[in-house]
Length: 409
Image 1 (tube, one colour):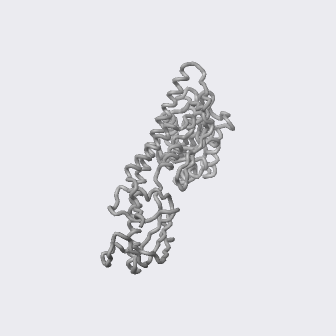
Image 2: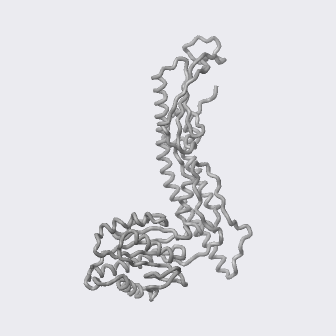
Image 3: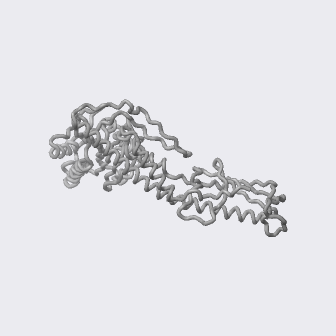
C-alpha cells in the first residue's frame, strides 16, 4: 500500500519565497553587462518578475469527470472485522471511485505550503495537468462519496486561494527587488566603464564577449521572453534630465497661460505663429538652443533642442483635428528621434471643439499606438505622460508628454 500524496506539504512558503528572490538576484548579477545596459530597465524587470513569480493553478471544475471500478481493499486494520493476524494484509472485493479535475497553470504550487494551511492537507495525485482524487471502500454510498469529494475540493481551493494572495505579494516584492538590482548593476557597470575610459587608453574588446544570449529554460507553461537587445559594447549617450524636461514643459505651460489671459492677441494666429511665441520663451531660457522648422533625421519638426548634433528634446505643435491626426503626429516624432532616452512632447491647440471631448480622446488614442509601452501618469488635467519605444529599437525609450490647451478663437 503506497503512502498518500499530501498536497501543499513539500516546501513552506517562506523557503520558496526566499529561493525565488535569491535566484532572481543571482541571475541579474551574472547577466551579460552590455546586454543589461542596452535593455530597458522596465522591460528587464518585467521579464524577471514573470520568470520568478508563482503561477497558481485554476481548477476547471466544469470539466470534472468520475469513474469507478472494482478493486481489492486491505481491511486488515478495520476494527469492525474479526481478523486473526493484523500484521498481514487481508484483501476483500471493493469499489474505487476516481475523480479527475483538470487545471490550468503550473503544478509547482501544489507542493508549496501557503502561509495559512490545515494540519491535515488534502490528498491527491498530480499528473500532466490533472488532479486525481480516489475514494475506495467495501460499501460506498453515493451521498458519502459526494460529501468526501466536496470537502476535498473545498480544501484544495482554500489552499490555492491563500497561495494566490501569497503569490501576489511576492510579485510586488520581485518588482521592487528586480528594479533595484538592475539599476544597481547598471550603475556599477557604468562606473567601471568610466574608470577605464578616464585612463586615456582605448578599451580592449574581450575575446570571450558573447554576441548572443540564450534564455535559460524555465519550467513554466508560458515562458517569458527576454527583451531583444544587443550585446555589443554599450555607448553612453547624452540625455536630458527629467528636471530640465519638466522645466521646458513648464515654460510651455506658462506661455499657454499667457494666451488664456490675453485671448485677443492670439485669436487669429496659426500653428506657426503660435509656435514662434514658444520658441521666443525657450530661446530666452536656453541660449538659443531651440529652433524652428529645423531638418532632422527624416523630416522637420517644430521645436527641438540639440546636443552634439543630436536631439534631446523634440516637440510638435498641432491644432486638434481628431485622434487620427494625433497618431500621425506621434509617428512623426518617432521618426525624428535618434537617441536613447529622448524626451518629446506633443502640444495640442484646441479651437472651436468640445475641449472635454478632446481630453477624453487623448488617452485611448495614445494607449493604442503600437510603440506605446506604458502610461506614466497624468501630470495635470490636460497633461499626459507615457513611455514609448523607438520605432527601430524597443530598448531605446522615449518619454512622451501630450499637452492640450484650449486657445481662443
